[in-house]
Length: 251
Image (tube, rainbow, N blue to C red; front, side, top):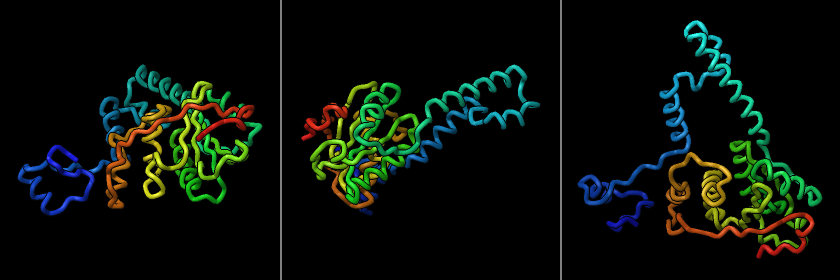
């Protein structure tokens, strides 16, 4: 609610529009879609550098229009960018692992880049919803490693009701785990944007281009309450190395 008592997450009515028009209440901002933000950023960068979006092939076609020294500088810059992208963008999909692979693929691998591991259950709706979101995240954040493992394969007698569980590692250490979908709004709300936003702000493993919490936009679509949009939650820090995974307490 705003200071005027106006619920900014509800659909506006004609009465609310009239009040806003006469400046009795604050006019509600229209939600800005993620692709609009990305497009705006692209054009801002292009205004700073007219060659910012030009590939090596594009530069070759423009060689008669660009000063030779500037052209060589741009070529070298593009080559460095391609080399850096090749190093960073080396994943792009979710890899399934087994318990014997856990230490190598998660703990040790996280020294080089963040790792998001999902403990899941085959055929469980909640697990499939999370894996669908992580699949999109893996395609977008190719410098982050995404793996999945069946919950009870990773931890003996791990409760199916705890799945999906996200275990996040960075620089060789666990920075937290999140059980279930509650922290992402539950089955009705969860989507890739919400997962991206929550992990960006709770773990810092990537930066998001979204300026506002996407959960409130989803709430508008389904006409739900907004009291949990900015809900805070605690990320529990636990180790899940294969050697001690049987004794891990994720309660």
